[in-house]
Image (cartoon, rainbow, N blue to C red; front, side):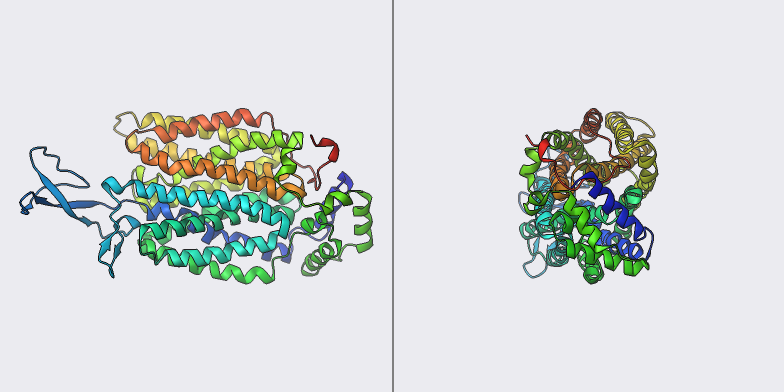
Length: 505
């Protein structure tokens, strides 16, 4: 659509009220749904932890050998020939590492030469996020934001519940893949439906609201209370149910209807918003006339895909630059989150603190509106990169207060990674026109999962090569700062709805 149509649609939403009853109910439903989504994504941050354990040893002739060992796969005394015939795990927490199947009398025992399974399951889950994000981008643009949003929650409920009753780690890994698909589906579509039903003035504010950090802190609290991965899986499924009720209230994006030339449906959505906010509905004839003036009927009738991004010069360039930034965010966020056991201090407190430091993202809205989306993202990325490198260096050193220093810089890096990602989300959602916004956002969300998929493997490698995951984090974010320089600023500009045919390659 022309700029006039974009500005008209923005003005219509503003005239219907920006802080009314509709916004209150709509934001509560969408933000509240973030809690079970956070549980679903972060479950392996607790479920994949390795509890303290010790071996019960047998000599070659079958005699019990009394060897003092804590988390050792082989006797530290090379002269002693003994075999670890069973393990005793710390009962203060239950994770998939020590999962015991009563009916088959089998313990998963994901330690020693089976330790790689834990990081592999996490990577499989994040591969699901990659697949789900890409699917959501296409499906959300073809069939609408609302249906895609609620289908993701049906999937989260179903697969989280099934995962709690896994009878083998292979079954659990498959179900975590489907949980990843549902999570990637959700994380792509929720931001689009929020952005398209919020006026320009408040768009950065609704994206920056710390719903995910609050979900992370609640997750840490549940881990402390339940300290059992199966109970956490069941709790996650139960938490999905209340938000499914919102299907009757959350409307379809009126912008999506307009981009599909469904003006009547778009008008009905606007009437619903007006009624809840006590405002007069927009004039239907004027809405039709303004849209008709755009003279892009042929564009609206066509289904848009990622191909439209690839063949449009400026969208292709912006997408490649954004891809680097999103890969960095995906890797950085999950490298710190899944590496929580490497931090010093209380495990459950550290999970809560990793969520608490992210609450700072609420300031991103003010900063992004004040100095621009691009500059805000640049500042957070630069600090994240520098502090990440500092943590990597500290993990090589032997200092008296090393634990406190590593925690301090790691929490700072996590805060800046998350806040920079929020600012990047705002920038990304505003760069793409409506007809490919969900596809473009899904594309970037997908490449972020490529970075996320590598995080568990590098966290695992960091047990043997201290500092590796954080040094890579620092390098990626400094590279992303360079990419940001070449992206356009979108602050206080009306959203575009269509691709200008003159811009296509």
